[in-house]
Image (cartoon, rainbow, N blue to C red):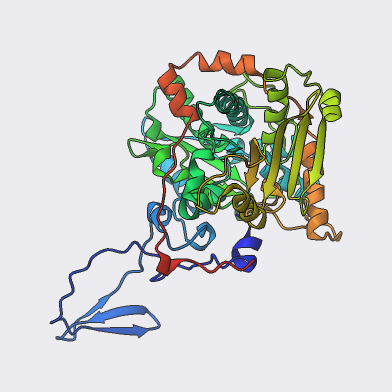
Length: 483
């Protein structure tokens, strides 16, 4: 979630304190008259004999944070030891001192939004930025692979379209109505829904985010090719959003205690890694394209048509026109049949697909918590249930205004070494422009089908799908939201 939302526009900031613990029953010893002493060295407990014992700081695990109902999205306010540059440096140092059989295979991936933000900051092309980062991670740092997350997104988009078709047909047949289908890639939105609007959960897609799909398939592939157990494969994901750290730490995304994604760092933390080594990305050579998934994806840097938040709506709309209504889904034809309306602001847009006689599909993009609240109010009836006639079939939902390109972990509006200044909007437009400069290609379903044939249905489902849970709010801890 964007820092703008966290610190200024929403009262969701809770630093680790009494409000940020898991409540437990404590048997108190009423005969204990110990005192607490505070000095410049820290906090101490003094017993009746004057013996002094230093008190350790409270440690809050990621699982504690996810299970707590004291806040909505406080990922940025919790110090996460296992999700940082410091942890990456520790793993690298530890690896050096180990026997080869005990060493971890290090692999890093970068999201398209993070790559675009870094390209903007260094005034580089997307392709050059990726190649230089690949050199940094695989030649300067001891990573075996540096890839992007587009293959995970391909799998997510393909499965999401299949899920939408199933739900749409079920509604038409009268067997089930779980539309509109809401996207699941944004962890800030998922955390919010689980804690405050649990009646929405059946309408959220069960397809994993590209980050988590990549974690599953990367570890599966390297397990087979290297012969090492997944605990010896250390996967780092570079993301535009701090909440991705919490997503990676969900219990659903681990197997026998081993996370699918071991460490998430944000775009800004990549710059920290460079600065720690006194490196300027513009002075780093370019590495060749990684071949880890070369059999299934293009060697070029590609993006998917649609928004810079993943192109979910664009893909579902294109796929549905072809599969459900047999309408030619070429760009020119789709644009002719689609009407786009801005609802209140650019972060809430409605897309209406017209058939020969009537509207056949209505979809929307919904970015930022203001618009999410309005969407939920539209979906819910007075009895706190979901309306059967919401008007939308599909909604691309993201917690940050302007979507993922404006994530809280993205770089500030500045070209390094340049005196040119940008407003926030100008910077977002510039980063979006770089993002859109990559080759645009639709999902290659045949390549995905070929890849998924390597797994049985149960394993494939585990790679692609997740579940959600209702986290009941304690009314005494609810946060007053000011809009």
